[in-house]
Amino acid sequence: MGALKEEYRPHYTYDDYIHWEDDWELISGTPFAMAPSPMFNHQSISSLLIQSIGDSIKSCKNCMVVSEMDYKIADDTIVRPDIALVCGQKDGAYIKKSPELIVEIVSKSSAKRDEKIKLTLYEQEKVYYYILLYPEDLKAKIYKLKDSKYEKIVDVLEGSFIFDEIKCQAKIDFDFVFERFK
Image (cartoon, rainbow, N blue to C red; front, side, top):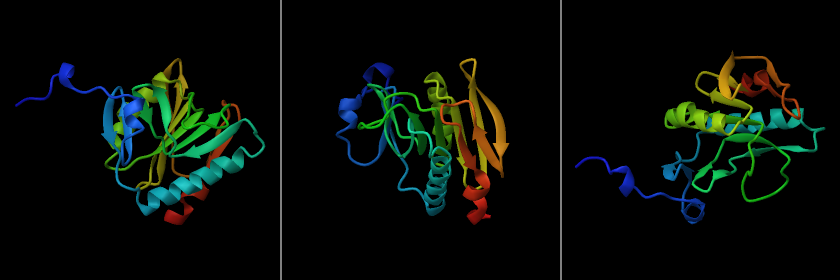
C-alpha cells in the first residue's frame, strides 16, 4: 500500500482549522501537529526574547511583539510563529499581514519545518527578518530578505543585534537572553 495520491488527500482550510482541538499548523492545506507544550528552556528563552524585543520598541506605537499567535497567510495556510514583530495591526484573531520579524525556537521535532518549510514560506511572504534560535546551542541564525530571497547574515552567540531596516528598529540582546542558560 503506497502513499495516498495527491488527488485523494484531503485539503483543509481555515474553516476546518478553527474547529480542531489541540495545536496544529496548516500549510498549503496539509495539517501539521505541533509538538507538545514546549520545554522549560524553550518557554524561558521565548519570554526573554519577547522582553528584549519589547523593551527595544517601547517608543514605537505602531508595532507589537506577539507570541504563539496564528498567522493566516492564506485560507489553507495558518502557522503559529514562536514570536513575531507585527506592525500596523492592533487587534484581531490572527496576524493578517507579514510580520517584520519572526523568531522560531528550534527543537528536534520542529527543525525540518522551521529550517526548510517555514523558511521558504516566510521568504515568499516577505517577512523581512527570520531568526532561527537553537536553545541547546545558545545560538541564533539571522536571515534577512534581500532581492526576495533569504540570505543568512550572521550566527549570533552573544552581544546584541539591531534590526535597523524595519519600522521600529528592534533589537535583541542575546547576552540577556542566553545568560541564564550558560
